Image (cartoon, rainbow, N blue to C red; front, top):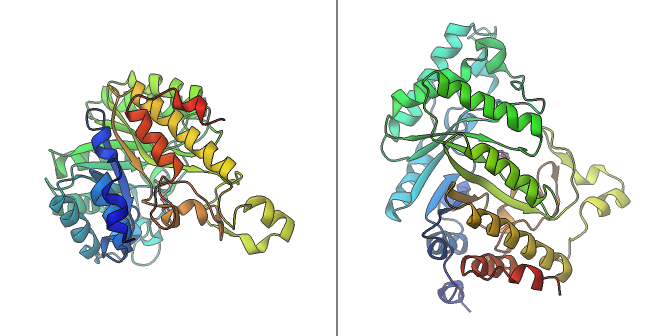
Length: 369
Ligand code: XIL
């Protein structure tokens, strides 16, 4: 059966949550260039918000000092406009996926504070300015806080100092006064880190810098973090008086391995360790499929309960085959984190999320049986 026929009868995610929050999804470059028709059909049917997975990161959109790569972004924005979607930009200032030249002068020497601020401003003005009024919300600063609640060590901090974050929001506000400005972060279950984010946002607010939302990335596992932990920080963050959003949702089913900036190749482990970290190469066993459905049901039940606090829930891939969870922190694994499988077919997790929207909370326990 043709894919279009298969999806024609599916309940529509964005419709079942239309009174609650946007349902977003991250698009990769192939999808933006229309090379994955089945994935794009799902995007059009189920999602009313999009974010680019990589093409707006500094190394992609601004790879060299005077070179901007706007073609993919132009297409991404045009796609979102064509389908009347809520369009998100990710991300302007980050320690990662930012080329070394950004922090150096022509002779390779580190820039001083003023020169780096100028470069940050130029980047933000150029990128945001081009899509003024068209990209509706931006992850201005991504991942600025360390596990201990202090600022994460990075070149922005080293060269500019702690007010690099304030400056980024000031430039962004000036570049497009109508855009929503967000702060995006992960691992809020680490209490010191969560408190650090809250301190940072309060500090910005006390300086008169308006922040419109906090993004909770949501790269989770079947049993980590616990729902109670997530609820605790939803409640803590909501006291900031800003909208919350889940910005990069995926639920990995494979064993945890610490994330480093570079991926480790699965093939570099001995066979036994490979099996341990990559157990489901021949498909996902029914029992794990059920665990995933139950986990998604619990998560969406929590989001729905706090729908007054959330403006958007965004998935960090359309389908399992796209997800970064299979190539980071270990490359060469087969993970199953999304609602749609590698053939773009809905999984039991998809049905479970739809049922939650339809008020069938009792489903959560019945998945056990
Ligand atoms: C990931 C992308 O999904 C990968 O394709 C890329 O190789 C690395 O970055 N936090 C973020 C996202 O804010 O930008 C990251 O996306 C995942 C972690």
